[in-house]
Image (cartoon, rainbow, N blue to C red; front, side, top):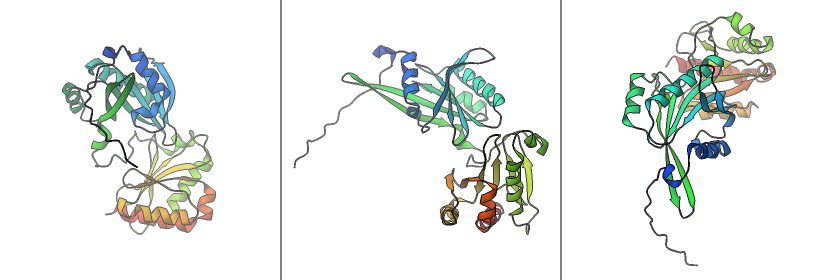
Length: 293
């Protein structure tokens, strides 16, 4: 069986306006298929969400599994200062409205200029922001859209991984008013599983999470929720041993997923601690050892 020889065809991107398409058309394509942006299967919470400070954010999207909100601003042509400021402002408004969630500002434009990178550099990468450059190609009677991520400030986190969540400090009373007692019991029970040889396990209360450590780096983060029957946790064990640890947890009957470069993500209930205590003791021991590397 012979195969047709593929021929190389050169094609250059065109502006959407030159193709007779406008921003409303682009927004509709993203609304129909949010995965175009490259963040996976996001859910659109609201299109053209009205902000209390004035204006409308093009999209508010969510990754419910990982509890991340994306504040997305879309524009045709080159990105300009007003859109940068607007996107960051919308991000900040939503971040204050839902402080227990992670938030990421997203700008989509046909041209990401050098001036944009200069502005971001002035901000010292303090805002988790993703810039996506859109290219449109006409092939016969079809339009092909290409979304390329040209900047992700999460990649430049000071610790090199962008893994430790940051938020203002608070106290236990704050969490007692925001979640169920049985969820905090899970946090307390996990704390008792940590070896105290190198320091007393200590919980640090923050508005978006509760962190756990001994004498080294923090190695575990809890994300209690009001309605969930479990507590989501991240445990940092290092990249080298992570898969072997996940395999052991799964052999014991626990569900565990990779997250980021060096963490394990789990949903823990009190019955999990009672039923799989030794597997969790081993997990926290590995994490505590890694925190003193």
